[in-house]
Image 1 (cartoon, helix red, strand yellow):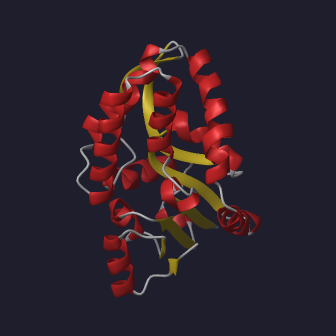
Image 2 (cartoon, helix red, strand yellow):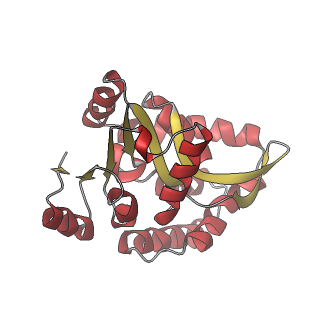
Length: 219
């Protein structure tokens, strides 16, 4: 049994779903453009630089979910998928996932972006398993908080191992393991798997991949 792990934003997607969801809300007029757009760009630049405070970011990103009903949010997300996400899914990404899925491997999207945004995207790729940051819910509605440990940096390893344990698995359960990512923030998990692959990597990850002899995919 083999394990294939995929980062989502700027790896399977040609863009960042977290950033684009915030921009989408701005476009709908449900958040203040001047304030929200500046903060969204600020956090995105921190993420790319590897300096993001994940809890500060999640406070910003999850609060809007608490201000609207789940019914309304789901309707908006369906529009988000049509207007934004479908154009971010490349044939190369679909083919990569299909190669692992058709080989009978356990395929998992593992992402720092919250599961409300990412679950429909993982489904669009035909990937059953998703490990994402979980928004806190009460009676089916979002509270604006986060439940458990964010799936970010070393937290991805923690969440992945929890996911394995829930299924009676551990790292030794898999003959092979691969992880595809674009980001320096994923170096902890990339160093954990047997076959790390850098996909359109940022400068820091590219340098690390070249030094370690990891494959680099350029789409």
